[in-house]
Image 1 (cartoon, rainbow, N blue to C red):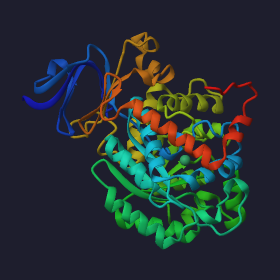
Image 2 (image 1 turned 90 degrees about the horizontal axis):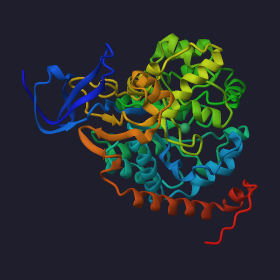
Image 3 (image 1 turned 60 degrees about the horizontal axis):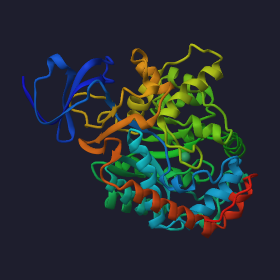
Length: 470
Ligand SMILES: [Zn+2]
């Protein structure tokens, strides 16, 4: 039966990521509006299309899903390298949050989103602070909306009045009341929720937030039928703090608060006990595995293999640019497998295919969009990327999946579609001028440095003799 389509890709190497993991050496993908209407081998292609693009053997696959990031950190990239978690939070992160304006958040989000789209990420999660500048997050949401990327943006809050170890600190002026936190999430959802963008609540973690805040935002997420995000079991100090304050480990404490469930996505999860992994599985709680960020602040290697073996839903995340420092999910895929080989002392562990499944199907399920994105199947959203199969790092093509993941380079992404809209074509952004994005982000970063007096800190980190005359 002939199908009509607005856009048709032909002669592509199609990685469908469907239930059987079909790969068609010479295949097609047809799109009508925002959805995929046909996909398969060329010999079965019966499509009448308004526009046809011949891929000449280039690879076509579902867009990548980044399960954890922070748009607001794009303009802090490199500021806090070689810092402990405590130093990063107190010298770096909180002072930068304090000076973030809506315009700076907009510029930072544009930089992060440009980097994500150009590397083939079509859906992303992003955690954004909103205290003391309540409307800063509106800048991030405006950028996400304009960009066309699919985004789940969580509004991050802290309210713990208890004194905590330095790595878990909560500055007094950045605390927010429960009523305000709930009202602001609802305000942002009314203003910004769309077919592509949605706002969800995020109590930052279980130490920095009171049980009342966690339970209230969890109830709000359930009543709004949306997700809640948190950073959980990210560090040893969080586990120790939880044990000494509540007599329970972090995930056990969330279970005690009845906050676990299929509405919850937890980022990091580096230090879950076997019993806590079982709790995640039994409650349908999802995990964003962020191996590069966990390494950056030396907080360990998460038990990815045990979580997957137990049946926990896991996707991959880059985390923000101040703890990764790239937004390169290809690199995260490679680390996700190589670190488990190292940790388990089993070179035969994992596969590039498994890493790619985590970055597509796994990520889609982890951010609650498993029915809509993550594979090239009829009825799913047309979130699609094309990768230039003639890049040096992808040869030989007999091992192209291994080469993409283990020798990957985001520069090979030539075309990116979200919901059928072409957002990257010929390796260039369609909606934004990249020169403007970079210049505005640079100006915003310079403003952060000036307003936080970070210049001496940044200069003090270099042992080299810099001549800063223009
Ligand atoms: Zn994070």
